[in-house]
Image (cartoon, rainbow, N blue to C red; front, top):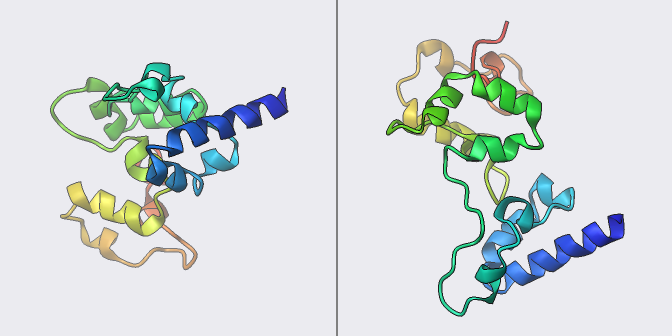
Length: 158
């Protein structure tokens, strides 16, 4: 069974790479690729998409408000924490106000590293209090915001 899953994951990536080489190459650096997940996990079998000569959408392309539920199918604890956060409540409301979802912080096809995460935060949170502009409290902190804020709820750490 495990060999079948590995073969299916490789086959799906090969099928997708013929048109989406950049996404597939990016994905090989993601933890999900190392865990042998395939494109189908997030995009469905997408048979019509693969066989289309023209434009046919994949079976699934998660809207920003759908991303947390998609990621939460595997990352249940992170979803619970995120859903209770201010960002999570805004995304769940699916209104006109934009807020960060899983992909904004973690990346979608390729991982988003700490410096890119901080730039992403700064797109909406440009006006930071002085305490947030200080250096991280830990010399090993990769993400300065996470020195004081919980990564998923974004609330102040106790």
